[in-house]
Length: 512
Image (cartoon, rainbow, N blue to C red; front, side, top):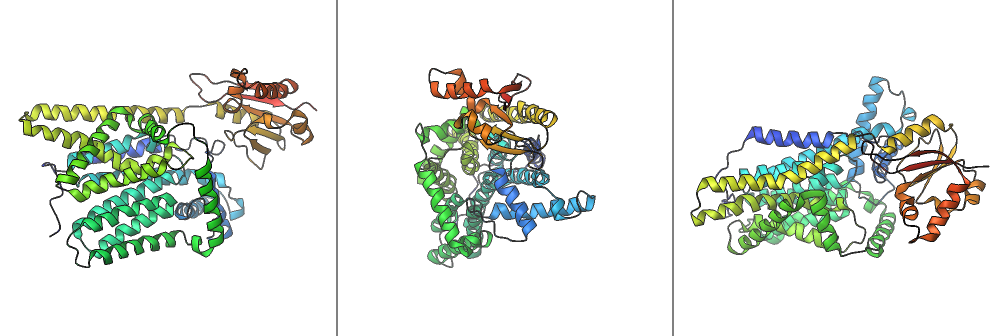
């Protein structure tokens, strides 16, 4: 008979008020300053989703002509774009598709992502209930305030939806283990297919329903048959949400090979095992929660050997271990790549607190000290992420040098001017300016810029800073920049301050 005693904690009473406060906190943190930078300070990957969805809506074609992401995020934003367009038409913003601009669609897309992020917190809660109510509330609370998840729930990127579908795969795998039916495992497999259709590496989530199936005994349909159905459901869900990986197979394979080569050949300065651990500590959990998660993982390995609840502990451990290992083989590194393993790490941190302290009962330590210890560890786990998240949201809400630079350009540079800007920190309206973006201005000589008809230059300290502050290390870069700066006429310098964060901008007029 399938094991039904999968909850550990004796207290299984759910506090609806506490859960509501956790979900409200999650939503507030993710919606705070949600409109930051629209339309002039858009992260580099956001247009790949928002503007492609907008173009699909305008063209009527479901072919994204883009395979860096599989397709589900694009189709989700297509639905959001259609809803936004209809709302705009009703309120009189535009009278035709031709009148709509992509910049009007970012906010709705971001709000959708933020709500998906908050919904992930609810999934973590239901996962945690397989251990107990206290585990569930602490795991959900940690997920709600996790700075890394809060930050990237503000943008239309694939990582937040991927985290949602990974958590959904985890939860449905637990449900399938409890029910022991072929259909429940197939549904869990389909969820992993949706994760893969959001981002290719989401396919690792298929491990969870397959392992749950293999460890569930007895199964009326049989293990092999159930596993095949689970895999088939995963593949079907992927193809349904990313159909052009087959319908335009050569383009998909060509793009996939290019991506694989980039991830394999990029240069990294230090051990990725160490680097990603630093990201987890500095940008997500802080040391207390991270150490508690490692303690929870250690407890999980013990339970894998001794029981009870081997299946749920295996699912809690296997995905983060495999996914983290996979990340360390890819040489393009971003902190947000860690997001899919955060639901499991939040759960492990919660088990490190609640289950770890519960072990003290065998030493006849009274309930009051144990309760106080749980409260203290809970505060220690939650406080650093809370501080980091609030600080991040406050910084996002503040006026920055990017805002000032954008305003100054609109007010002082005439329409139709040709401008070259370093990086993509300030995006100018294409209908108003002939703008181009380069990694560094020094890549071209001043004479080349002049011959190309460039009228204005916008230098960004994120590009030129190291060259000017340490000329002895990069004398050639320093000289290149100084030649450009000295031959141009400087119009404005916008420097950061404690009240106005951001890079320094220097705006020049090219002298004819």
